[in-house]
Length: 98
Image (cartoon, rainbow, N blue to C red; front, side, top):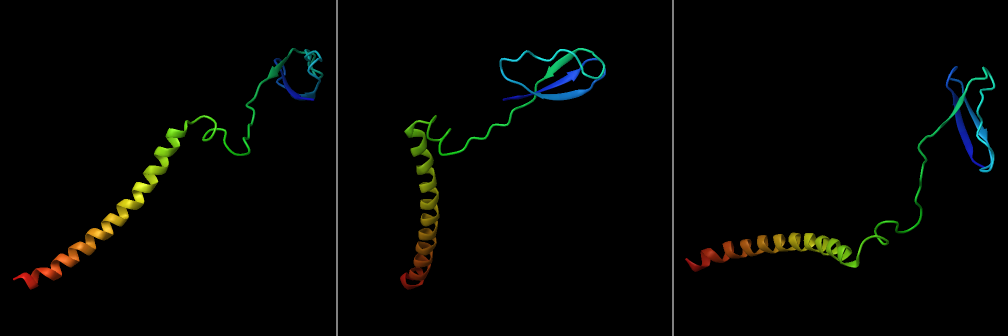
């Protein structure tokens, strides 16, 4: 059964009541007999398990773009290391050509 929060409009007293969905809302404050209003608050939602966004909402082409960008990052580092090795090779062969 849900717990409802109420607040009195006259004395400001707040109270919580556990009620069935079929029960009528409380209308009078137990302290001052004033009018009660329901207080609505944010609800916490926790998504557990796999998916909910990546696997359920995205198309397969979007996920392949993400994987190719991570692959290109590693190829950039390997091309940078090959360019340093080629520059050291060219500098060592340059004195032999003179």
